[in-house]
View 1 (tube, helix red, strand yellow):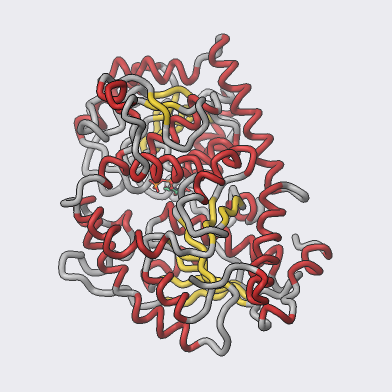
View 2 (view 1 turned 90 degrees about the vertical axis):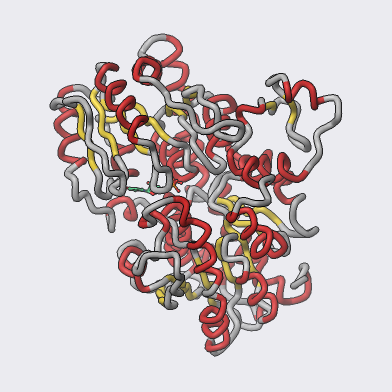
Length: 498
Ligand code: UDP
């Protein structure tokens, strides 16, 4: 709820040209859209009609409209721009999780670049320029258009400051020559610009970094042509994380942007949006929650929740091994398999295993007393949701920056164990056998000394996570300062457009 203090601080000062409108433009992938819908909710709750007078609009496309509407309050406006047709994309696919294959991701990106025209039209149609645009980094054209219209743009990557800075450093900053042989031998090396305590090996280099060096890769080409030269010109970087977790890496991240640009750590946004968000809009079509209720009554903390998010395609052979491994672990499990994976389990999972393919209310699942651990691909949203509920993780990264998130969780925070797979940077993802899966799941659910230590670390982070978004918390203050600073920036007291 907005406080009187929020209201006093956020009323648009005269110098801001009366700008009182924030426009959010998420990328059409669930892991990128959800946090910005939560930001819209947080802005409306703390700086909106009830205190501060900011108006909030989310730009989306017709196919994503219903998903968004269920997740933001009525006073957040939604505007649907037509999703551009593209010859390689099946009709009606307007979100990456609906893509029949990851090979179509580059075509999807190219289609979204065609949103430039309707977006320009939308901005031009507004009676007054907005205070700010918060848009996904994939939508690089938004920086161009916003800059032409004299509007500050914050870029959003959906990644933590640690992982984003780590990927930028590895992709763009040279290693000291002395490290070359260490790297080749698979030994730990320092990440340029990072504290000495952060070392990685070549097998831990995130997939996104390896991909960035492959100039023939169509996604890399798109990033070069449409994103990179615009992203670094952003007025600021919005980060779905918080100071206690990621503050040490904010300055490193800022060093990749123009002088004066700041990283704003305002998350976890699903908590900033308010707890009621966890109850609303999250359907449970598969009956996960009642199933968990039964398990909680028998044995709290006994269920392993398994999910690889909405982007990763796990091969049928790996799904088979996972199924055998989960059954062999002896632990009850709830496993979200992507609906697009045409696969059926090779083993009877019995009454202690539940495999679901529809939408899972993940945050409520993780918060459920029946759940005691999370086998996760380490998408950043899943990591934050796990940390916010104190669930330890079995970190099994597959693509993108997930290997960096796994490192953060397991090695730096001590809130998880690693699957011990190569990240895919130097090799195709390995097939992890059933015995290894079973052993690692047992390690995750271990109630001996190691398990207790991991759970204590997870609990410590859970408390810090909640504190960050509470009254006076670092993320709450950062969001307030962000609004303040944006308003002041139009006075000429702060760096304007580049
Ligand atoms: N999610 C969910 N239910 C589902 C599938 C996904 O709630 O059935 C949410 C999940 O809680 C998370 C997001 O979708 O907030 C996925 O983002 P993440 O970064 O974890 O992974 P990605 O899908 O982007 O790889």
